[in-house]
Structures are given as C-alpha cells and as structure tokens.
Image 1 (spheres, rainbow, N blue to C red):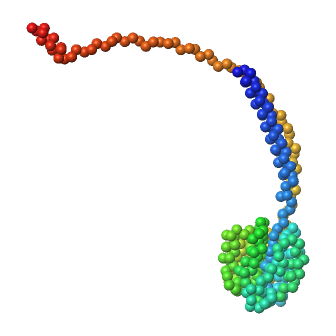
Image 2 (image 1 turned 135 degrees about the vertical axis):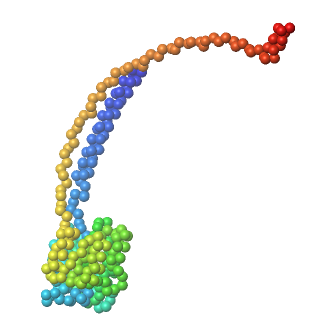
Image 3 (image 1 turned 60 degrees about the horizontal axis):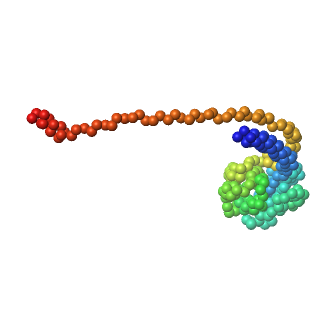
Length: 293
C-alpha cells in the first residue's frame, strides 16, 4: 500500500506541472492571435445616396434652383468621404411622368467618388418621385452585404407613384437587411415632411429639414458627423509577455494506517424456560368434581 501511494503522489505532481505548462502555451497562442487580428484595422463604411431629380427640384430658393444647391452640397460631402464604399441612385432624371425612371448611376463599391461626382453634375430633373421603388432598388444592392449600410435620401417631396415608402422600409427591416435610412427633406411642407420623417424612423435613421442652402449644408454635415464620418483608428494595446510562475510544491502526505478493527465478542442468547402448557378448562372441572366426591 505504501509503495502504491508514493507512486500516485509522484504522478499527481507530474500531471499538475504538465497542465500548467499546457495552459501557459495556450495563453501564448491567444496573445499571438489577438495581436494579428484584422479587426484592429480601420473599418470601411457603406453609404448609398438617393438623389431626387424630379421636376419640382427646379423650384428656386433665394433665386437659386434647388437642384443646383443640392448638387453643390452633395458633391462637397462626397469629396470628404474616407474609407467609404459609396454609390448613387437617382430618379426622375430622364423622362417626364415615368414612375419607372429610376437608375443606379454608380453601384455601391470602393473608389467611386469621382464617378459619383460626375453623375451628380450631369443630372437634369424632369420626372416624378417614385420613392418606394427607389428604396426597393437600393435594397437590392444590400442583400448580399454583411456590414450595415447607410442610405441617405435627399427629396423635396413625397411619393407621387404607387406604394407606401414608410411601410416598405419597415418590411425591409423585418426581412433582416442591414441598413439605416436617413432622410433630408429639402423645402417640404408639413404633409410631405410627415411621410419623409416616417421613412427615416422606420429605417432606424434620422430626419433633417432644410429650407435653404445653408440649412442643407448643415443637414449634410450632420449626416456626415452622425453616420458617414470615417471611424477613428485605435491601435491594438501592447501585450505583455506572461510571467512564468512555477507550480506550487506538493508536500508528500503522511501515511496513516487504517485503525485496527477489534473482533467482536460472541455472546450466546440467554436460555429461556420451556413454557408450561395450560390445563384445558374441561379437565380442570373434571378434577374439581373428583375432589368433591
């Protein structure tokens, strides 16, 4: 028994030391993986613009056409984009009275700033305001994208074709498409603003109002600050090399033999007298009768 116990103690000490070394090796692998993880790199953002080119954008504010103001301010914003995949959709820019006049001028992707600026400058307002269909076309580009996309709609009116854009945006959210919808209402009345605000709320984004060039610039600046500004890069923290701590010494336990068990003393059961059988009542009466005779 003593020899077996010594062997068991030695094996326990070796196992404890081996487990500790294994844990330290795992920690070293974990530190190396954290230092090389790609999540420490700056993240690119996705921004998809929808620009209203309906006929009403020829309306003037302070003597300047709304489309001219919108172009200038949007171009300025696009020029400031960094680490951003961007795209551009417009509606009403080719035909009058055509609710299908919606075009993806620049698909969402990297390195598109120059193309977006060129198409913005080439837009000529002509047609209607098919908001629902425009959002549907935008969502078609987002179904295969894992990262969230910011959709920025600039419009001077409400839906003038079939569909309810507010309800449709809610359905897209329920479908699981990852996006946020931000809307700038440019010189809109209360009825138009109500629908545009509903679109932004349903899309989990923000609504901004603008009634002149200065307010549109402020609204686009707010969009940039809130959702478009490139994320700040933070380098990963420096990792300290783990200090090796040897396993604690295991003291050899003292062997205590089991207590001796005394053999129990046998005590025979006590003897009992044989019980006397009772005299039957009939015989007892017979004896009494004989004694009387």
